[in-house]
Image (cartoon, rainbow, N blue to C red):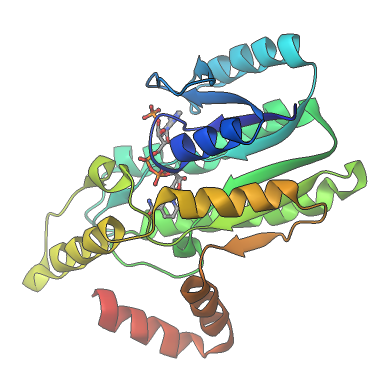
Length: 257
Ligand SMILES: NC(=O)c1ccc[n+]([C@@H]2O[C@H](COP(=O)([O-])OP(=O)(O)OC[C@H]3O[C@@H](n4cnc5c(N)ncnc54)[C@H](OP(=O)(O)O)[C@@H]3O)[C@@H](O)[C@H]2O)c1
């Protein structure tokens, strides 16, 4: 049975994905800080911001399985508020989790990947689009995207495929867990914008939609380097690439600020 390691399995996309993959016959190791009761999951407590934790779980998995087939970097967090209002502590936390977490888990687990293995990183449409009042989140997901692209080139010789999944609004615990700081809100712009984002997420796609895309990527011999989830997000990403930057930013300002 192919062996998959997923970070962030205690809720949302990671939890749903673990369930889907277990039901599809994969051996799944799931990492998170909170325990989860998914049937058939090999749960291992791990904070992706803690190198010692990562090394311990990597050694446990290496001892049991020798090699793994797929690594999925899914664990992530959000913060909201303007760039000027955001606390240094929160900014550091988001980069430690969303960027350093992905880098560290990848560096520690990649040597276990078998030939033809895959690394799948969960980015976001927000990594392509600049989302005001979620700037640090956008920046963290852009970094994941660049990291994946570079890794895909460097690991080509080892026949390891790397894909970034770009979900759009998805209904998970992400909205509730996000920390928001608003100090100086001229005309209530930040609050209005953040409320809209929260509403969009809670009316968003089910995690299963994202999980199905990931399952397809796992099964493909030559997966693409980036995949947006859903036709509308594919279109948005395409348009924002070809339209003048000034138009794109103007449109985002109208929608969110
Ligand atoms: N929801 C959306 O609209 C959306 C859109 C685009 C991309 N995404 C991305 O999708 C991924 C999954 O998010 P989600 O929407 O499923 O949110 P979620 O329900 O809040 O799940 C986040 C998962 O990440 C784990 N996690 C967070 N910090 C961690 C840490 N330091 N160490 C280990 N695990 C950690 C959490 O587990 P513990 O708290 O138990 O550790 C949890 O299992 C994230 O990378 C997110 O950025 C989400």
